[in-house]
Image 1: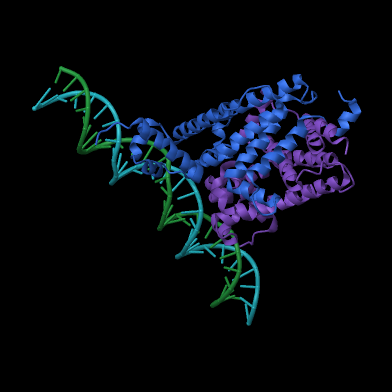
Image 2: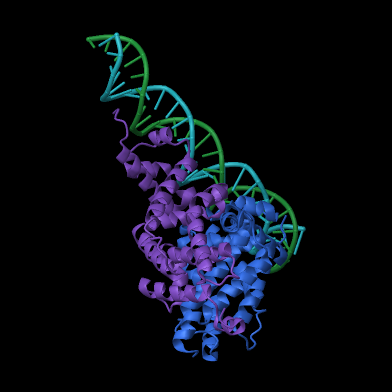
Length: 218
Length: 218
DNA sequence: CTGTCTTGTGAATATATGTTCACGAATTTT
DNA sequence: AAAATTCGTGAACATATATTCACAAGACAG
């Protein structure tokens, strides 16, 4: 029964892992069950990965790569923030629908019991978005389309917070329930959410009516 | 050694539970360790609570009660949304600092593996905030201080999302790290964050400069 | 064809921890 | 004061699962 695991088999194993971690959390995920689903033995899993933690990291990295790929679609053309936001929201809504397990596993990372990964993974994951969003906002400030008294980093952080919750709302049970509570019992449509979020963001990033009258239209 | 557990001892047990659940997550939290910390035996824990899940629910309810209490401080006076927001943010910043474990345990609830509680707990927890925020926004719309084309439920949802992340950022390791990344390596000060968030929110809820010029100042 | 190397297998081990229950001590009842 | 009751104790049990390792089976060198 000697037959080196193919590239495809290894990929299948990672996908099985992502599914298991998403479904049962890092603690409860069973290495035996993952191996079983991928059609390999537990033993060989430990030949490729030293322990559960390192296998988990491999799963996360595969999933992060997929997100990174998706976000490369954002076209960097001259535009207002809302133009970028529209693109990003659409991509993330699609990504969440197609890779629900990725988002669910991502939420797992944020859990306290996985603090040992916090610094390392925050860096790896958020650099994809943090840089992108901060740049967009900074440019728009030079542009004059975003108010200048707003700290670009913090504004990008607020922006990312809203997008993160958008995705959790699409994928994680608790957040879905929470969302329903705010929307009269049913999940709102993607299009409607995007529209409202864009409106919210566009307002947020520019001057409010009061500011305009105070500053006389600067 | 027969001595009925006092009210105080039971409270102490719940606090020990909150700490343990916050620190290790529901799965890894050890009933024996909780009992030990509270100075009682495991056996009696099972006389008061049928199993770990129901003890966990009791801990959550204690913690939710505390949050509810804190939010009662919000003064319902006539005000703009930003006035309310300022109050709410201050309260939550203080609450997060004083009851870090509460927030950490709350984050635990949102975890996938606790989906069995999702619907029940989302209802119990979020009704405190969902109603409050939606009302504030609805009133402000009648007031003319919040744009009317914004759905009050969804706007309240965005608002709560930002506040939730604010608290996680203060209490949970992953979110702290993430926050640092957006702010050049160090956690921003509470005052600075509040100021920026208020600015962001005040803009968001009112008309943007473009809208004003389009609508001629309605 | 034979010996050696590589690599997958899955039973066995070690550990952890939720839950139970026989016991005993304090209190209450008769 | 003896019997019955209430309640806390913690050792023991049941279960789950990460990880290891002796073994086997194919590949390959000579």
